[in-house]
Image 1 (tube, rainbow, N blue to C red):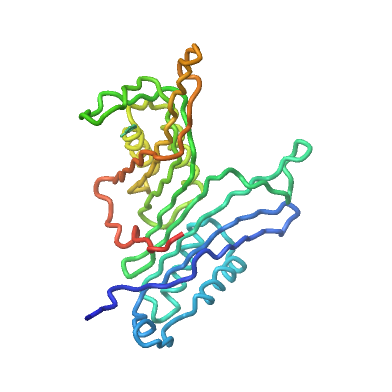
Image 2 (cartoon, helix red, strand yellow; image 1 turned 135 degrees about the horizontal axis):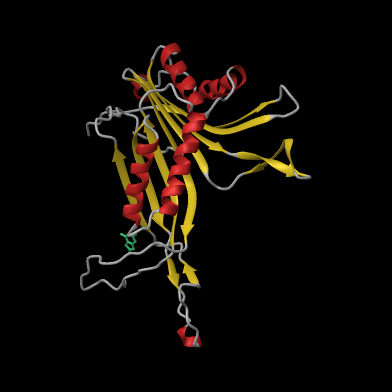
Amino acid sequence: MTARLHAHQYGKAETRVVRIVRDTPRHEIRDLNVSTVLRGDFAAAYLDGDQSAVLPTDTQKNMSFVFAKTHGIASPEQFAILLGRHFVEHVEPVSGARVDVQEYAWVRAVVDGAEHDHTWVRSGQEVRTASVTVDDSGTTVIGGLRDLTVLKSTASEFRGFLRDEFTTLVDADDRVLATSLTVQWRYAGTDLDYDATYAVVRAVILSTFAAEHSLALQQTLWQMGEAVLDAVPQVVEVRIAAPNKHHFLADLSPFGLPNPGEVFFAADRPYGLIEAVVVREGAPDAGDAWIRSVGAP
Ligand SMILES: O=c1[nH]c(=O)c2[nH]c(=O)[nH]c2[nH]1
């Protein structure tokens, strides 16, 4: 057998970094899960067991904590840029770096009607994401979110679809539309207020989902992608994945009860999985920005 090492990369996955700013009695908190991946010629480590070019993953973990202390966490994107550039610029064998961050949001606890200075409640199940790639083509930043679960209880239909002899689905002219969104958006440039753009993109996604009458989840995804590109000039590409969380009308006819869209069976599996990539005309090339690790969290 003739085998060849076709590709390789390595890094530290899921370093949990919590940074608290406690310069005043009113603290701030940012809670990240940071994964770093280094790219370059590390073939000798794989082929010969030679570690001389390998900066330990333990050191990569340490850098997350060091930068959290020395630079703070302005945003997940900024933090990922800082780390990625550090490895490429200061670690000689490294030609490229990929940093993926998930941020878990904490909101201030409300105690006696007032926001507390140093007590927090974890907010929802939604996670903010950032993915930064640094290589010889520059720095590419992808913002995102996952597990944004939304439901609209009317203004959704699905009719007129292709039918064959195996189709049993009937037209729905007023159905529940529910999904758990994963959205990623690629920025052109890096000089941005990422927290502000995150808030705009999230708001646009929600307002589009709420305001647009849906003929299918496919149409809703297109409308969301287009609306994000309209709202944020620095965003050049939007990728959306949406599981269709089916809500089937419960059959209450055996009990002589009508069910005009009031009682549903929420099925968790199987689900339709609808995806779209919406790109701004003339967008710069994405390079390796979308390439994820096989084992990426
Ligand atoms: O919005 C939808 N898109 C589909 O492609 C589809 N297929 C299906 O069975 N229900 C739905 N709903």
